[in-house]
Length: 398
Image 1 (tube, one colour):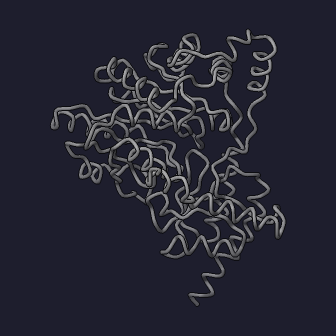
Image 2: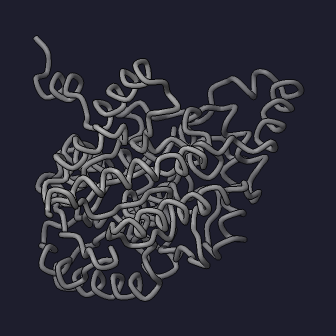
Image 3: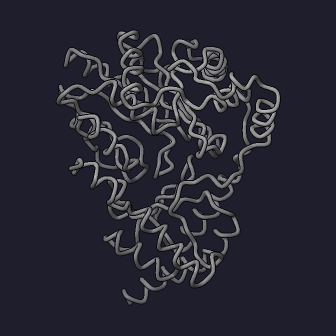
């Protein structure tokens, strides 16, 4: 009667959703202020005033048919030109409006790109830890997700392991930097070596291998870290971007895909992007929000709260004996669990009203994710609970 595959996807609760529901139940029992929910990657920094001001001005004074009407499938031409000029100014990318395709956020951008590239038997390679929905997206498009094991000493790319994972069926490598969930930012030297490896494999296999650069956290970096602009190092790069994190607009669903002229057979790739968007019904990204992000192009939101929260949680947990790589970007901490079974550890943490996500969900068992896009006071108040949790393991070992 219905697709069994779609039924399973629609009715199987994700771990994060299950944790969230547990948190709602506990909040009703003990008060929301006593539940420390680190499960969701939902920005807690308010959207900047300039976003509100732009939206209000456009709604009050813009032509309603322009603000609310259909756009052409790739998005408003004037908007794409403005955003392309901003990319050229900030990163040196040689792009114009024709290289951009507006989307309803990063998930749409990534899914459209996978759909556009996938042919029967294709493999997409990603690095653990990784965003769990990559598997859903790739498999829904008929591809296979290949996971390179995590390099847990720094969560940079293990290029030796990557080389073993590459095959003649490799269509693309997914690069998510700053990374969800590790907070790692891939260094320029890493990106250069990755580009060299992929160019050599393109020659060996006789076909292009793409990098799909998933970059919704691009602007959220700390301690002097910078995010390399991958198209400057590797021609066959397709960039997927969203304003959900940089402008705190996750509910508005607005982003874009960039296909540089340097990509192999630009016209066919862009045409396939348009075709995939058509099949997936991801045409006509929200018109109002296209106009808003164009009006605000080049402006920077104050995201310093995330750096403060990162330092507070990292310093607090490492002082308690947790082993963790210091995050350089995004808004996640990815420490090692205090026992090998990360799911059991997270269940134990719930006894202290600490809501954490097991690392196995991200392809990296033995670790856990704590999203610190929360109120700073909540982190401060949670540290004694983490201390109690850590002591409970010490009492077991004594």
